[in-house]
Image 1: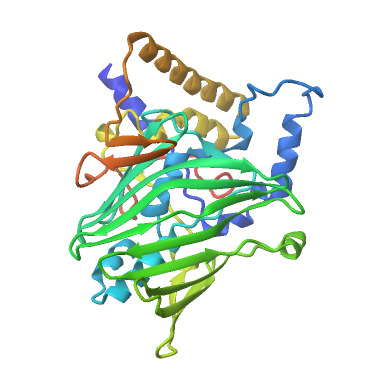
Image 2 (image 1 turned 90 degrees about the vertical axis):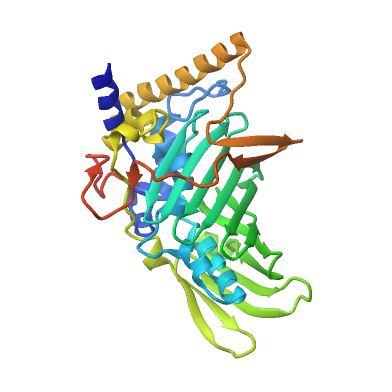
Length: 402
């Protein structure tokens, strides 16, 4: 049994993060995805009941939503943007660094393709340098995910609790990402509260997906605040197939409204900050330096990988997708979903309540709030490093990965 358990832990598949350059992969263009969707429905009769229709693996990215969340923090191209938030001496410089880090969490989205919905209790635990990240699925209906990250050297604490509320708007789906994001610079005794942008999945005039809406970042201790507007594409730009990922914003004093900086640029290229007092311009973010050529984690300590690790739970599904073995992937996905339903039935029969392992949670009306049970996140058995390590997935090549 011990050998079987160790072998299961070693069979862990995590596809590489979706990077800036991967958008040019023809496999994931909107037209190809639409053709794939239509091919899946070619044998479905008009008027058929689609109530129990399950998303087939052909429309899944080979990763769980938990991995997507974790990547937004631990997966960056060489720069420690999180640690920089506390290293700056002046409060205004620290807020600019928090703005830069927040922009770095924006990643390209593949239209029509979806990560797996995490199962209840699923976890994802990864370290990169001084950054340690743990994510857990704390509620299944609705799907609520909690994430805790800590920076060992700079004594930084990041807490996310988030869930989606999609709404159909006719020609597009508006996905509101609810919950909270809080960063604490413990050495500075500062707290930064921020909300999350919306995700727009548009069908007409041309299909595509992009981030939109207003992001607010506020620090009560320094009386400083930032607003970032992610600009939605215009009808003409959408018709021409252009991608407008521009950002416009400002940094100002909360109490007086006195504006200190203008923020502008494109989150998938560069973002600038203009000092309104001196007129000085500076590049505060370069996407090519931070979200390009991203690498997957590797296994450092196989015996320490939790049974609930996302890469273990979905390993056979991801392996089937990466090999284009769709029937194998479908069977593996059905098995994961079946196990989740059986676990739910067992808990209901015994009257057992589900208790998350790493977070406490509170429901206030329709909203959820999560808090970590521990003050720091321990070093993970999965690491992002250039050093020697056991590669997680032997099927990872640039032709197959998204």
